Amino acid sequence: MSAQTQIPILDLKPQIESLWPELQAAFERVMKSGHFIMGPEVKAFEEEAAAYLGVKHAIGLNSGTDALYIALRALGVGPGDEVITTPFTFFATAEAISHVGAMPVFVDIEEDSFNIDPDLIEAAITARTKAIIPVHLFGRPCDMDRILAIADRHGLKVVEDCAQSFGAKWKGRHTGSMGIFGCYSFFPTKNLSAFGDGGMMVTNDEELAATARMLRVHGSRKKYFNETVGYNSRIDELHAAMLRVKLPHIDIWNTARRRAADRYKGLLENVPRLISPEVIHGHVFHQYSVLIPEDRQDEVQTSLQESGISTMVYYPVPCHKLKLYQDSHAVVTCPVAEATSQKILSLPIWPEITEEIQRRIAFAIRRCL
Ligand SMILES: *Cc1c(COP(=O)(O)O)cnc(C)c1O
Image (cartoon, rainbow, N blue to C red; front, top):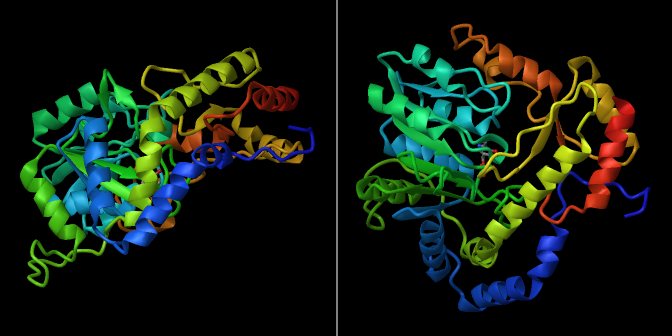
């Protein structure tokens, strides 16, 4: 890559090019079948994804956002209920809670993992709390032992937001397979991605799986015999077929992301006032996010942009600070999330990123700081 070439935050081209013949074959198979909704590709993808994740039921949906609110609906969470989650996430996590009429209760994050702090969860539980939604942010698994133990003690359901963690593992188990539901997104930038919107939820509970399937198609188990107000949230045959091509490669891609994270760790060592993330077992590095001094965030991002390096701030506003929640909420403070949003910077990462590109990025960061 020449010095002039803009380095994107994510480059999907190598992945698509390497699978081109198989993707094309899948595309032709679906187009010629004339079957576009809820056909054999969706069924096969659900079976293959469930087998990969080690769960009994997988339900293909049209987004990760839908997966979250269908999970909450299936659990009967609604108006008057509270759901505990992290403020340091993509808005969809909190939105799903609000969407079903419940109230998100935000609990601060850990400084090093960026995930919800298990030490602070119990203090946020009230008589109205129904569920906890941990988010395995940036692909790093949450401490599920502690979260599940707290949920158990208080009779709460755990819905895992795995939108960024497909393939991540906590002590040998896939994220999404430990809570009552695991919710996934196949948005184009996620580790396992479709060519448009897509999502999935998984569970080991037969009855809840049937309820979720019913909610997916307008609240009907039998066509035209609608029993509740549901959704139109099916994953397309075309997307399912494409995802079936990609699924067998996810472990290789995730391992390559982890290797890239290891390389960054070495390259960014001793950069003054920069904290790079720990490369823990099972982390799938959906994002590689470093912390820099907060008074430098804008300036470093601009300077990298001028050097042809794209970066992102995930997330500039923690959910509890969003204007739309200011009236409806008791004032909560999440000082770690607030400080992190001012210091965080996500660097380019994708499975095929080369050491040469990473060197160029590290060099530019070192020069700034
Ligand atoms: C992407 C994402 C979602 C939403 O997924 P969509 O498929 O875009 O609806 C939910 N939660 C988190 C943490 C995400 O990153």
